[in-house]
Every structure is written in structure tokens, then in C-alpha cells.
Length: 361
Image 1 (cartoon, rainbow, N blue to C red):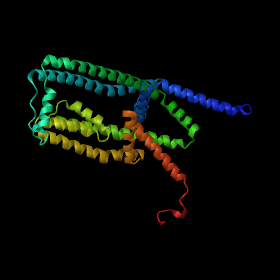
Image 2 (image 1 turned 120 degrees about the vertical axis):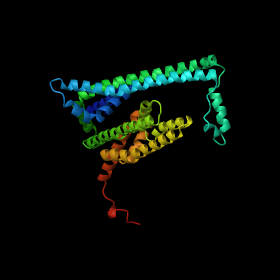
Image 3 (image 1 turned 135 degrees about the vertical axis):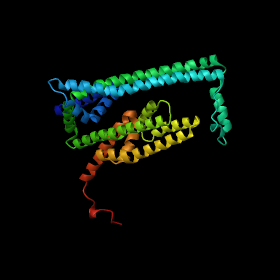
Image 4 (image 1 turned 90 degrees about the vertical axis):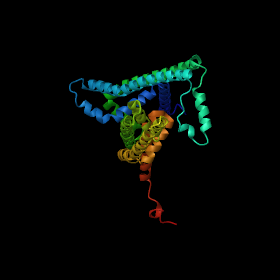
């Protein structure tokens, strides 16, 4: 039976070989898959910007120079804020360590009056406050602090090394994607059409639109939120308003996460006795968040991706849960493809008998 159908046997063997090679390739590159995915997302999100950038170059090597300079520009935009945040974080860590040692020498700091007057829990708060800052002396504090600081430094160093490697390979991949993007676009489209037919064009188009709309509606709006809240922090007299504004912008990319940052800032201001500033920060944050989440983002994402904002929201939350930060962009793209499949399937279905079931009992 096998000998009578050699072409079928060879076809099955070829598919098995391809599947095995693909599985081995994915397993071998599993450490670099996040960098590859980030590079593709960045290339899709900045395709319009890169078109205008490429138009400024002339000559035979225009593609190489355009890809190199554009990748450098993206790298600077990504790296400079990280370096600034890392420097401030290190400074704050040193300041916090000094405060801890000082508290061990002079005793616990004074408990804010309003915090010790909360009905029902004031005794527990005073006890927890004293336990948190009490110690046998500076030498004992250092003895207990050194292992924790060493472990914290080691973990931060490992995470920083891992993120740096991912960023380097992301930028390297982005350079080659920008350099060969026309050929890559044609090859991907040709391979997809051969596997799934011409109907896949619509799915790819909707997925690309979803990624671009997510970048515009999530990242750019989050940057605007961070800039506005940074100005609010500066007016309220909060220390390091640029850093806190950046952190607010990063958290604003995740739905319902920005209140964590400006809420903590408001709590700290209230603990320091600046109740009016705390109320102003909390009120400004809620207004900015309400306008961004209820008006700006739905208009940008829903209009460009032709996707209801509810599905965008579910795609973002589900993507973060499954893929981490990368899921902010992959989730909406997947939801856009699923919605396109659903709409295409419904359009191909025959209409219900009797002209629709709405009027039937």
C-alpha cells in the first residue's frame, strides 16, 4: 500500500520533517523569541514613520543608512529613559538605606498624626510603625540589611542583564526587518496565501491595523498621561516628578493600573501633611484617566482597528496575562483576527429561514 502511493508518503514525510525542524528552531530560539516579537511589533507600529524617514535618503545604500539611523534613533528613545530611571532608582536606594540606618540609631520617625487617629486600628498602626522602624542599633540594622541588600542587588542585576540582552537583540532584529521589510512582507503574504488561501489577507490586514491602533491608543495616550501627571506632580511639589510621570505613563499602558501610581503619590503627600496637594493629585489623576479611557482610547483604537473597545480591552488584559508586556500589542492583534474570522464566517452563512428569527415566537 505504501509502495503504491510514493507521492503521498513523501508528502507526509515532508510535512513531518518541516514540523520537527520548526519545533527544533522554536526551541533553540526560545530565549530570543521576545526580542523577535518586539522587533516585529516595533516595525509594524513605526512603519508610517519609517516611510517618511526612508524618503529623506538617496543613493545606492539608502536602505542601509535609513535602517541604521532609524534603529539608532529608536534605541536612543528606549535607552535614555531607562538609564535616567536606573540612576534615580539607585540614588533613591542609597537614600533609603541611609534613612534605615539613621532610624536604627535615633529611633523610629514620628508617626503622622492623621494616620494614628484612624478609628479602630490606631493601636495596631502605632505598633506596626514602631516594629517596622525599631532596631537594636546601627550595627544590628546593618547586619540584617546587608543580606537583603545583596540579594536585592543580585536580582536587579540579573533582571537588568536579561532586559539589556533582549533590548540589544530587539534593536538588531529591527535593523534587519527595516532593511529587508519589502521582501519580508511579500514572503510572509505569499506563504500565508499558500497555506490558508487569499482569505488570509483580511486577517493579516486587521492584525496589522490592530497593532498600529494599539500603539497609537495605548502607548501614545499613556505617554500623554505620564506627561500631564508629571506636570501635576511638579506643581504639587512632589519629588522627582519626571521619574514619577514616566512610571505613571508605563502603568497607564495597562488598563486600570495608573491609579496605583498617583494614588500612592497622593497617600505619601497626605502622610507628609500636604492634604490639599494629595487631593489635587488624586483628582487630576482621575480626570485624566477618565478622559483617556472613556473618550480618547476608544476613538483611536476602535476607529482605526474597526474593533469594539470591549474586545480591545479584553485582548490587552488577556495578552498581559499570557505574554507579559508584549501582550499589550499581541492581544488586540489576536482579537482583531478572531473578529475578522467571525465576521467572514457569518457573512458566508445563508440567511435564516423565514427572513430572520426575531419576529418568530
